[in-house]
Image (tube, rainbow, N blue to C red; front, side, top):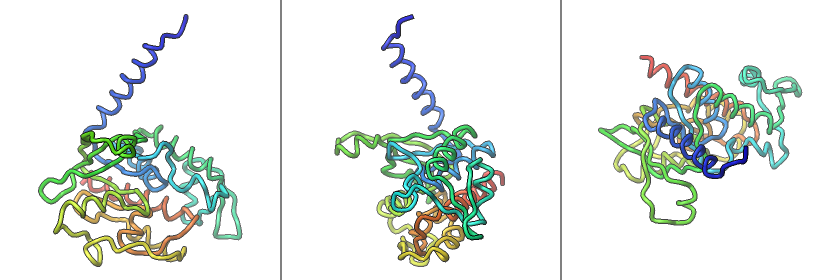
Length: 260
């Protein structure tokens, strides 16, 4: 049977549209498909939560793809190794406390497991604003990344969510736009604003990234490097255990909230 280009196009449009329509009203919307966002999506989907991840770039995985300075190996400390094992990501011990994994295997396996668990991932979508109702973040305002890059005057659309997790990393994009547009709102931080990422100190940064994973405003959560930058601790470099544990923690906290 000859291939029909119109049927191919129709299949893509119909199936993508159905997927997007199903995600207009979510329990959890995650912004950023890096390590913490993917782990959070995977865990929440495992627990049966309706969750979607919105990634502005073509590729997902954040900084994990490139390992350290394009040496595509990552390091994970022993505390996070059970997550690698559960995902089925091969790792090897290094000098006791450390474990290494292939960055490509880690990224692709994590993304695959998140989708297989039931999380939906939408790439090439930028979150340009949030929805706020009665002093609570209640959803996202989204636009195609290509529209943003081209500077076109095109109106966005919306996603409703009971909880929003900012996993955009160093740029803290969701938290920034929330603060800019909702003054005099303040966050649950020392300053009430974004306290800022500090210079590298892997040991403290890894621990506090997990510790600082939290709800910083009703309905708005931070995880991974976004927690680091929002609550003001040290960056950690190419060690990814804290990012995984942060995603795991925020998923558990939100699941408990939804269950309560």
